[in-house]
Image (cartoon, rainbow over all chains, first blue to last red):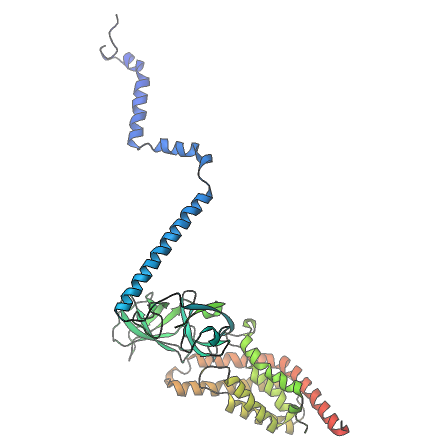
Length: 247
Length: 178
């Protein structure tokens, strides 16, 4: 009876006899080391024809949408409750009505737009008008079926704004150009280009926390009051429909 | 009565101006500023119908345009003055035939309207004089007057011919009776 191979003295000839075992062990070691990557890849490649279709992807995405919407609704309710506790203006998106822009004079002497809805639809003077992206102006006058909106770029426009990053107030003044001027009351407001400008969270005239624009340039060395220019997020030149916040 | 007011179609042409103001076609703007439609309409009216009629037309047109704009600045004094000036030109001189004359008059008229509006804005907003040249008013006056002056030779000459024809019809009717 011949001695087993592992009992035999070490010889290269004997080693060559067990090469399949060595290769198998090496392969299994690689599998363990790579956490089965090759297996998983092969599995994925082999089963590609049987992967779930796009319908299932849409289901998952719509599920995510629903999840985000419900989360947003809960946060909004929470926000309303907290604002009510603080006796602040309600921030509700449900009281907005859409109106078409029927006339647009964004440049020149009169920076105004005309909307196709008026008092009959509940629009009153002073109602804030929002475009896609943020606030664009205030309703200055309303007829039964139309409303005239003074744009934020108009020289007569003047509203209080808020820099959320620094929690500071400023005054946004129209100067006739497409970029309104932002004036701060403090000497060194520490703002920098790129800061978001929104309506104040404590605002009672405008809907709170509505984005307005981004600070484009800032002159801290201004002699009297530090000021900068704001690029509006919602551009009135390209808006066909707006939303009006009604009380 | 031989005024253009007696022709409803002439009065109706003036009532189209608010629609042109509202439409503000973007392809007919320079730096976002449209032409001064009131000047383009008032110039032929004044040249055909004389100073009194043009002054009244300018005043009424000013009222109409003030009603369509926001703010306190008014068109009335500038259009009234233009009506008187152009009306006198139309009465005293030979009838305007050259289109470039119309362009020049419209350019001057638009500059005048723009400057009066700009002054009203400046005085009401208490702007610093150092900022006047750099402000939007300066560029608006330039853009609007240039565009109005360029359009006037075509636009005004058509309306001028139309008003002259209407005026001739009125005179003819007055001469021969109904």
